[in-house]
Image 1 (cartoon, rainbow, N blue to C red):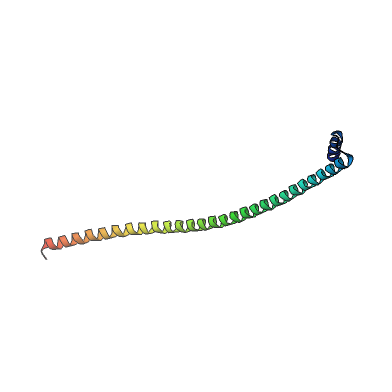
Image 2: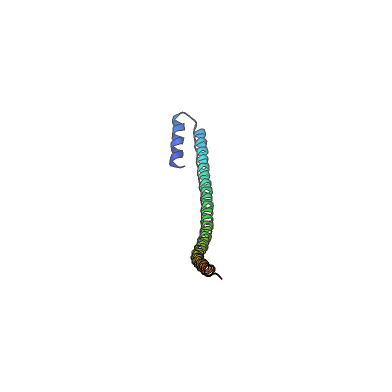
Length: 119
């Protein structure tokens, strides 16, 4: 018998319980102790399983978030290229507007001179 069972056995004996009853009660308590240890081991095993599953889920979520981040970075790069091209086209548009304005002014001046000279 273990120390704890021996203490229970001694307590029963001092309480006036018969030898056989004290021994069987102490042995029964030993069985309960083993059941609690088994229950504790089972709970530890299940908690470890749950921890492993959470770790797997965390790794999978991290992997998927990294994929999404990578896709967002690709889209950002595409938008940056579009922005650069848009700025270039705005510059070309300004140049064309100035050329058109100059051409209109020159055409108006030539037309004015032709009309003034009486053609």
